[in-house]
Image (cartoon, rainbow, N blue to C red; front, side):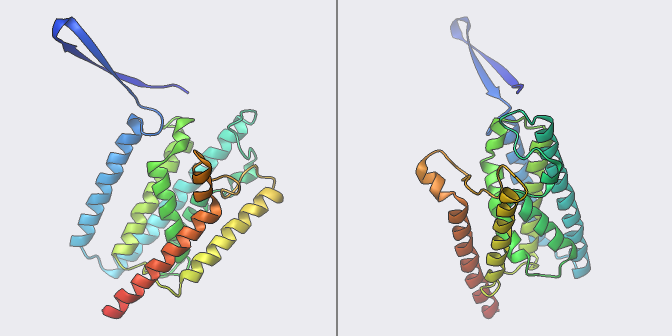
Length: 262
């Protein structure tokens, strides 16, 4: 992978020079830091704008549906880019699932993004699918924004990298919009939707591995963080889903209290 290095020379007394080097590639490299800054800035602008403006229901509905279409386009391009690279580099140890049918989602992030996109495009206000997609998408967005380990092995501007970052960012902005405009309201009763969605997602993962021949799918046997055995257990698919289920239940309890207090 080509590394882009920026150099800055600082001249000191005695004609000494200090060379400061910055690697623009990789996790927390220059490109990633710039992206994080822009993502945070736009998120702040969105929150401040939505606190001041109150669009009518028709406008809100249009924004949500158009945002759903954009999210579906971004995640579809990302899936195609990933599968295309895997097929072209099938002999590489980095290639996983090098078959065109593997465009079918094999990660929490892509599965959740498709569910979120379709639920925004076709679903009604606070529809049941959101009570799964919002939690898993938020988890995926945070992981991708702050721990994008894939940037250590692939270039930031590769389509499989940049479209991955973009669909996560867009999903997070969409979730903030849904929450702030009351289009998504946590509810204890609807926590069952999260459990059902999680069961479908993991069922698809096992089907892809044992029937469709995927190398890996839905983090099965593949923790999010493997730095230590403890982190491997803590970030395994079952621990992560349990934590998200508890989060959904807690958010639902808070949401029910807020509704009663109105």
